[in-house]
Image (tube, rainbow, N blue to C red; front, side, top):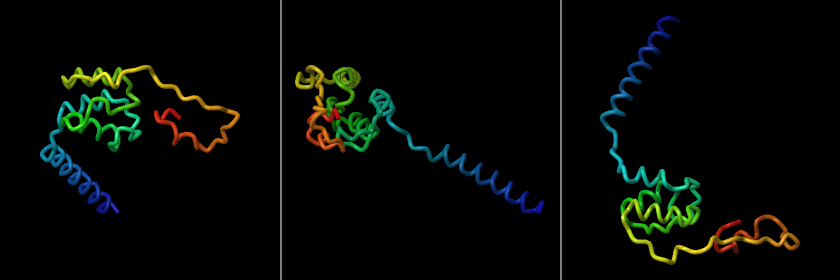
Length: 123
């Protein structure tokens, strides 16, 4: 019994040490700009930008493959912050008053049928 416990303990320590070395020497360096942009994004991972979550959107922004206006939940404040961070100009098309969805409670039957018709995805 003691031999089994001792052998499993030594095996666990040895494999943990090997994993620690692998994590240190096989680490993949990431783009620091990607990390900064990901911290700026709202982190809702809604997919409205067309990318699989905020990490994918941040990667596309850091690579210059996406416009700074890609995140609807972030709003105009995020667009301005991203434009300042990336040093790009923002076109006037992204600015404007916030849009508001109105739901007529008398005709609403529930089940989110009106969500697909909302152009701003506010529902």
